[in-house]
Image 1 (cartoon, protein in one colour):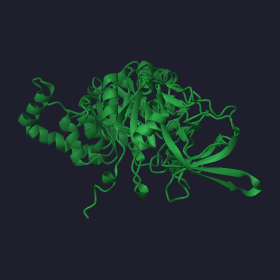
Image 2: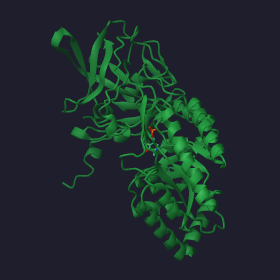
Image 3: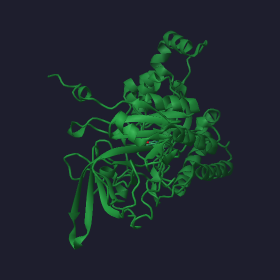
Image 4: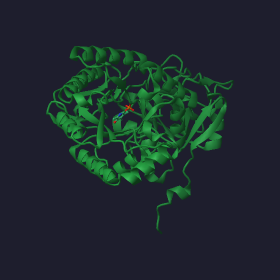
Length: 488
Ligand SMILES: *Cc1c(COP(=O)(O)O)cnc(C)c1O
């Protein structure tokens, strides 16, 4: 059974396979799948924001991950416009984060979600304002919580009773030492700050698990995250937070899955969280002024192939706003502010991975069909999603175009593992040759961040392109990097 991003219950759901036959023209770049600023140049070469992939490969070696900066920024705008404010959009840094990305997000006014001390450290080092960061995770350590609180984090999304106790303890400590904390806060804000309570949200499991075209709605959820809604844990967590003067409840949070195309799952989740919000302000009227955010998480899907049809952010935003305001009115409470946490939908589509073809092998299958194995100079070390999630990708010849007939192909990596597949089923022109560059679309999310040094293969460079120029965001690993942990 394969691991699955939406959890084990979905692992036995047979995924649709796209058996649509070869596209009419293998050289076409479907705008749904490829970055917004992509084109073919005079030699048929792929150009990203005007930069020739052959030059990128020569400068940065291959594989290289190329990010269309304007694509990234335009998707930030799309979400900000759809949800009415940039601050309502919290980019999920687990999809991909570097100092450069954190600066782009800061420019665009978005919020940022982190789920470890490491992600938090990168964001803070890049100068991202702590007040716009939320901290997630099912097992935050005392040290992580302290670091986040000391930095002036925007919100801690609490996920367990242990965490509430840890935060309450931390709040007491701060109260015992008010002079130091207040001084630090004041020097940070340049103000005469008083000791503010720690802002927290409660992560609720709403019993909705969504993935692509289907969702499952139950009364409970068999997973590690959050407080159960129906089991009463969410209400109890809220009670414990409300009882602690050093904590301030600012929102309720739910996150239902990943790569979701259908708004219906979000609607069921929104419905259930608004109900909890209404119950909460009835039980704790004193919270009504500060408990104003309904965070519906991330999970908005993107097109990995031309067969994928994700819901655009504005359509999703409208559906959510409608259901939340309707439910709030029914419950007689103020309409909460909706927040969302897209990762993949912002960073995924604007990045391509460029590989060089190293070997080509034709394998005759039962029935006489031939599958061409095209081996590239990366693989599961820079993109584990195909092996891990059975993910589908679109690939094209990038250093030139070709009019040769399509050939049933499989793009595989250089690792010592037969599961090392980058694109399981694709068509490439039959004249594909060693030394050609090929590009895989939509690799911006959950590829680099899950990369490894398996077989001691270095991680590729990540390069941003914009207006005809390229800039290294993360440099390619060197031999020294591969040996930096050795004690010899
Ligand atoms: C993973 C995750 C996200 C982002 O998911 P995407 O599918 O990349 O949009 C947002 N919020 C939480 C809590 C997550 O765990």
